[in-house]
Amino acid sequence: MNNEELKLLIEELRALPQESEWVEFKTNNSDPKMIGEYISALSNSACLENKEFGYLVYGIEDDTHKVVGTNFEPRKEKIKQQELQNWLSTLLNPRIDYQIFEFSHQDKNLVVFQIEAANNQPVKFKGEAFIRIGSYKKPLKEHPEKESKIWQKAKNVVFEKEFAKRNISADKVLELIDYPSVFKLLKIPLPPNKEQILLKLEEEKLIFKRLNKYHITNLGAILFANDLNEFEHLARKVPRVILYDGNNKLKTIKEQEGKLGYAVAFEKLVNYVNDKLPSNEEIGRVFRKQVNIYPELAIRELLANALIHQDFTVRGTSVMVEIFDNRIEISNPGKPLIDVNRFIDHSPESRNELLASLMRRMNICEERGSGVDKVIAQIEVYQLPAPEFIAGDNYTRVVMYSPKSLRQMSKPDKVRACYQHCCLKYVSGEYMTNQSLRERFDIDKKNYSIISRLIREAIGAGVIAEYDTSRMYVPYWAS
Image (cartoon, rainbow, N blue to C red; front, top):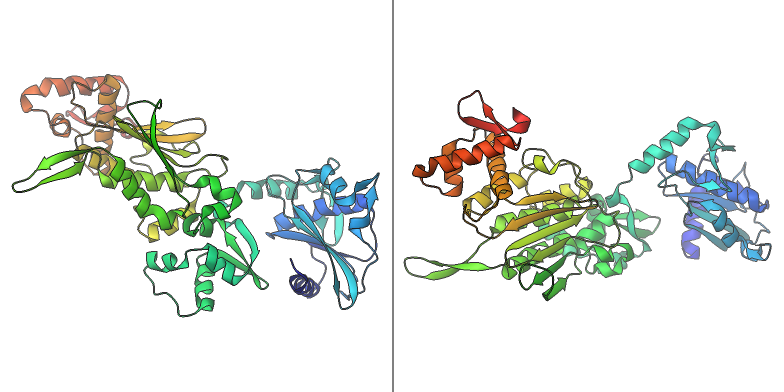
């Protein structure tokens, strides 16, 4: 923060009716141990009060909030030849971000410790956590109800609301964010002036204004960045598309990595992937045309799902599309929140609900709970093998396979197709039958027995069940 911002901050804090649990005013008490305990207390209290920061302010009178100045110069303080800030940092656990500002206001010297709110757990100093109770600093262990709330708050951290870039000017916001795309995708007119543009961006939770500066939220950056490399902790979250020669990863033909925000780049990503997929020539009455062997709607929906449902806390990895001769794999960081066998019928549980909601409003993805159903329906229309949904330790992967005849499919392929067809029928208010499964595989009626054997195998695998002995079938979870 510059001097002007610091002065505005001081006036905001002085205007508080009394010393709050996330602000402490001091004059000259510079005991290092006391400062460390206050950093712990103010960080934990800021968390409970839903504040981004706590503040320890030197040079303001406690009772009157009058600017009196301070003789404390923290940058000159040393503890056993170690600078105060470094000494404090080594004794805080977990290490949190805090900054020390020394400046002049009303011709008086002031010092502000700006302390990040506790996030993943209570902040301890020398192994003990503290909390503010009114204007008093107390050991947190004496207030277990507050400690429990801090842990609960940690579980409710919302990725989209955290900040990707802090304390920047309005002009810098409009430089980093592709704001015309915001209005275009939301189908609303672009306002005539900068102030109204910024107001709408704030309304959509893409930015946050504090004093006369702006913070760009993760939601704003991940969806609308002109260049995600400008946001350090999001730079590795750009989708990657890798094209391989053959059916394995031994030889890479091309690897492409973008830089635009997801909403800005989504259509480009879908088109790029579709352009790299194999196609067949379809002969019409007059013209020949190339038709992709994978349904475009399925590609679109699976890409959107991978972007939306990824776990952004998994570092160093991103959504990845891998294209082989015989399949396409779409992976995203994070283990799925629901059983992969229930993707078809279950309403999705999103880690990133604000992201999902805004992408639905921009028609980038389907309405809640309908996307995978449409993917499976398209796969059946294209007569493709059933896609495979895989839950890894720290990833989710969908595999779509190129065309195979029923004879070429393995037993797991057939059983999976039978199960998914049964699920699709059930969520459509119908039941799977021998006839419907024959139609799914484009099998002639005279081969009725082949499908009957497949149904028996699916029942034996425990994925479907007979409905009322009527030769109609339902998924295992509906029996």
